[in-house]
Length: 174
Image (cartoon, rainbow, N blue to C red; front, top):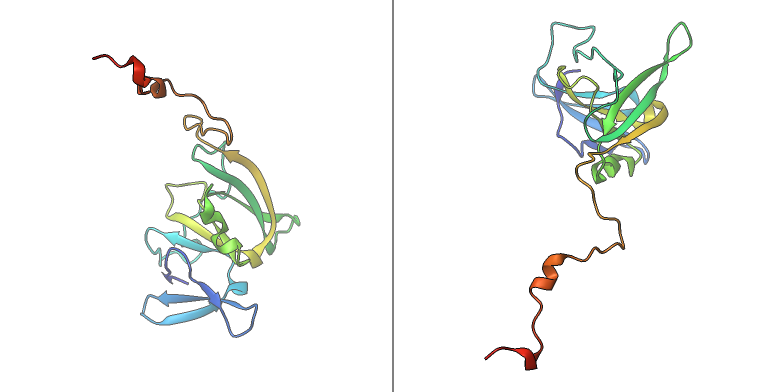
């Protein structure tokens, strides 16, 4: 279903206590409520590819060809209820953020955002509801080696601190 959603905070409680609903603004300007249990994934795309009904998101690659270069959690997941003739579940890989944004919707057991393997495709971000995930694997934590953060509790003395120490009162020159 093509439509518009905000970047985050679009999942709300439905009529039941555990029902989660997404309010989608469709292309004609109407708000359509969709139960989150009926959603496989939500793709944030550059443009709506309405002429292609088979693959409007243009997701050509669902797994990484090699280790990703961008920072994040490299995740592989399987979708619930999507079995092929060989009884293998459909796999999808993506990068999740390394910050608190990962926990935004997971705290409410709603889902997670991933960056797809092919960043040059039409799909820029994917939201996958918790109800559609059958299996989730953490493949790697990818960090940028140039940005080393100090370990907690380790305080390295700076040479700069010694430059601006005050002299004792009796040793000041006149």
